[in-house]
Image (cartoon, rainbow, N blue to C red; front, side, top):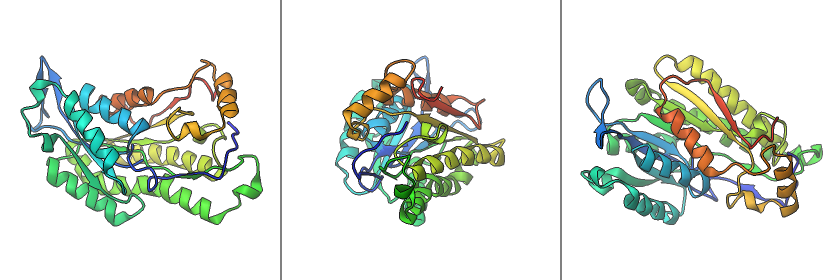
Amino acid sequence: MHIRGADMEWSVEQQPLYVVGTPFLWQRNRRTNSKLQTDSRNGSRKSCLDHGRSRGVGAAIARALAANGGMRVVINYSSDPGPAQKLIQELKMSIAPDSQQDNASQQFAAIKANLADRGDIQRLVTETIQSMGRLDVVVSNVGWTRMTDFMNLQEADSDMDWDRCFDMNVKSHFRLFQACREHLEQTQGAFIATASVAGVKPSGSSLPYAVTKAALIHLVKSLAIIAAPKIRVNSVSPGVLLTDWGRQFPEERLKAVQEKNLLKRFATPEDVAQQVKVFALSESMTGVNVVLDAGFSL
């Protein structure tokens, strides 16, 4: 996908709540016959941390995991709490009446944290544990890019772009995993990262972005080996999504991508959310990267 656009940036600082961009925390409550399912090992309820935005993909994942996955959610935001609070109110309205036995503040919450800062990442996890008591699932959806012409090496020759892409698209995911590892080991939980089709097929908003998303996919596979057998580690790689950010691409470029997609449509945030839910609930998948691009990469 060779798309050239204006000199735009996409970052968790500017667009907090990138659900698996700015972080989320959830506590999973599987239901059987309308009853909450607990961990069979100790009878306690499960909890999840989701690194993501309160809009677009992040909001879709939060809805899928809170409503359909029966999880408790803590949304992390970087600056503006408005979108996070709005999503929390929506989630409160969507939960089943039988789950309202818990105080609403214990089911959904928002925590401010800068995902580019190791100290803030550790604080985010610590406050999640203090609030939820345990951590079962982490969805790490942070990312950054500056849109350039993928085919133009001069535009790609920016130390700032390379450094920031590696910091946000690779190192931040590793730092979050490190901060969560001991808690996920205790619950035999799951860590899920959001990569990109640009990391599978050379394409995308910039060369540094594509290369670092490929590095993230390799990081996920490496962590799956290192963290086994206690932690499952997987990733999802969406193609172009018609979120607020995706719609910033020129219309003619979006049409060209849609025509190239074998299914002649775009994948949706809900598609991504459903795959994340599969990873969160399945206990037999690790080291897997699932591409959701409507056939773009084939």
